[in-house]
Amino acid sequence: MTRRLIAALAGLLLSGTAARADPVRIMAAFTFRPSLDAVVRLYKSDGGGNVTPDYGSTPALAKQIEGGAPADIFLSADPMWMSYLQDKGLIQPPSRVSLLTTDDVVVTRSDNAHVPPNAHMGKDYPLTAIVDDGRIAMCNPAYAEAVFARFGYSRARTN
Image 1 (cartoon, rainbow, N blue to C red):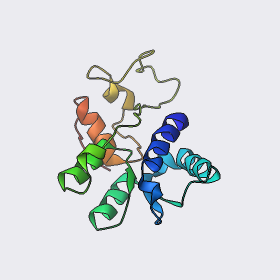
Image 2: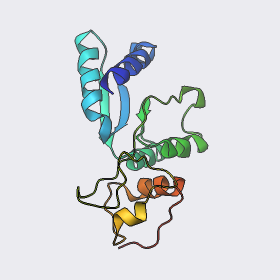
Image 3: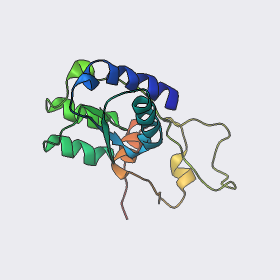
Image 4: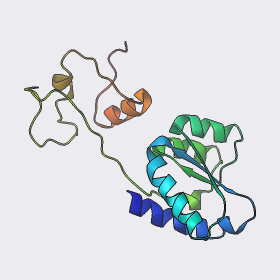
């Protein structure tokens, strides 16, 4: 992930945005922090200008941008929020680039008999059998719900 992010951001920073006297403001999801911090260090050590990263959850950052927070670059961990901002006219559509992708992962006990070997999530994935009692822990419930909906699952209840 770091190499691809370095290449993409180096291109963005060197494309003229960084030539300004003002610092380049990057709003980025927490997941980008290790890679983006490395990119910023390399950029600055190579004589690049001032870059100010601001980290947070993708929904919180999108809402800040919607509220008027300045950002030259927005690194979203969820394309849904990028579309949200685009629909509101808050990003320039030609500047929207998909840099990275993620895999959705389900983690369970190693002795869970319902887990098929080498299975990939999809419409036939036995998620309800794996979850067993119907409870699941997740980092971002809205994102997880969108992922599950893509695979044909719907929320039965919340606790």
